[in-house]
Length: 239
Image (tube, rainbow, N blue to C red):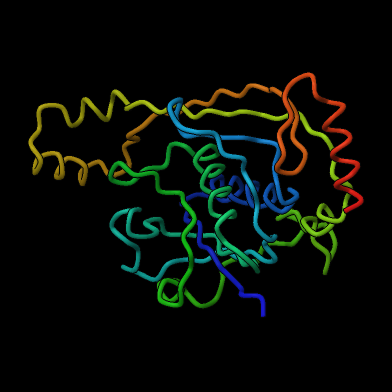
């Protein structure tokens, strides 16, 4: 029996919700493997982004009074959240969502921690939100174009094809305003100051992407090996 998983992705304002839904739709439109290798810093190793099974539904929830967490390290801290449901393994899904949520919504922080993340939704966490959703999101909005059929399954049935490989690096530096706010303070004073200004952005991020070589599913081919990539795609499609 396939296990069903749910996630909550917190947000505060409608514009953040739309960006979250864009990321969910992007996930659903991908095949099992993307064409992008990513790393969180120039000293880290690249990893090919993968996706899990498609999200089959999405709703907007509102938290109950006093039920949000204090720090994003512990759980959602923002009042609203998108709740999404999928079947299958969650590991690749979480990696994909975290990368794209940090890139799409980089400046929402709480106590120095990025606050728009994906959290596995346990029964205990679900009880922190009102039972009735504020809004039910259409399947079309999350990339499911036909009722009962999802784009992910269609992509899996499609022939594998050669795609240029993208290599993206994330660069992160301390926000000067954050550093100035805490400069010269001891541990207790820093903690108090962060509580006084919890939404101050702690880090500034930028991204650099280069295109090099080719990828077919999860197999990489160097520049100049397009013919080999085409041959592999043809063979893989017949498997």
